[in-house]
Length: 509
Image (cartoon, rainbow, N blue to C red; front, top):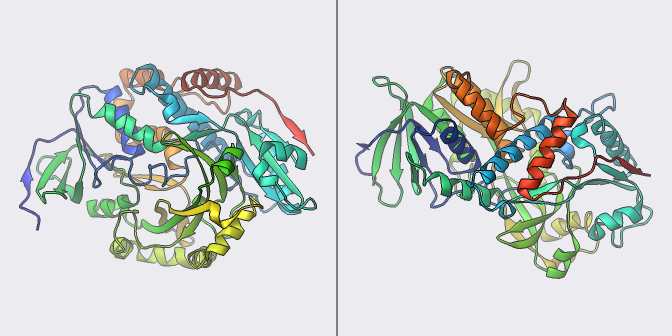
């Protein structure tokens, strides 16, 4: 049983959750205002143990080079590349911020969390090949994607991705794109490195194995109070801060609801679990050096886009395929089966019901995924690796994602695939909801949060100048300035040890 709540010294800022989002915001705030005080609370016994962990996260530096769900086909057959351009530009901001931290000595080991690896999209069948070619042509309108190569030549594709092409039906029509400046990012390693340095800074306190039980406005003194329990000792205390950020992954929704801010009403969450097939044959792992993404099944959520994925985790090259989607009422991998039921309130019941009615294909897809046999999973893998054998692969549990459900005037409720910052009108509390592309765009997400919640500070010359140092392209559009983009990519690639890439366009049909 928990002991009676006690008060403690109060920081300026409280960060809930020790993932990549809290790490990014915490480091940014300390760089912008060194005397600011920060408390970080994490319910598990280490940082980046949920969605930011390498085994729970897709690990692709999501720059829209290979993710086909970021370039949907319009009803008239044309390709909408706007989301891809936005994500590609956001990832460039992240690389700039990481480069700044490496230069400052804050992060000392760039190869430990990021490295270059080709990003490829691979499809088969006449309709999908036509789609991929249209996508390629649409992306060539943006210099963010210059250097992308396209091919329908099986010989060329065999050089790019031998596992994918070995013993494939020669009559099958196939196509692929390749971007050499793609990256593999270990967000778990990055997050832990950031927190390691952050907690050593004056005014920062890190509390592991501490769960936030409640949150409410401090009417007498302003700001917010949280009730936090040490899950090891059951000691409970109340802490007050003028600003609270809820970056607890799938746990953010429930805490946001507890705050009872009007802006949170109507939001719900739909949890999606995942699994990987992990290769255990070193000879096979060594043959694949790429991230190869395909098209998602009808009704599949974005994080379930199938990919044959080379990763570097804890100094070892790994090869994963998946993720296979599933359903669980947990909002976190280490959560409770009561997470979903407890999140349902009168304010979000109708939007959640309407979103369910509008997403019956997703429900059908998840049911099919849950009922898959090992043979079904192997069959899905063989679409990308025809020679795959059961004994070379083990099943691993991936992370838990919670998709955002929100009110909609026309539909009643819609399921949002993406991330969204929900903040109070006065900017004193904010929460991050949603999933992909998430971690890869953490820097741009946190800049948006700062603009919402720290308006006066963001308007100051001191903060603007510092942001320009941290992110050299800050305030300028990389999507509209090819020379600036080339300068930035050259700069960050040199610091992070990445492939610079050439400004080429190659098409082989």
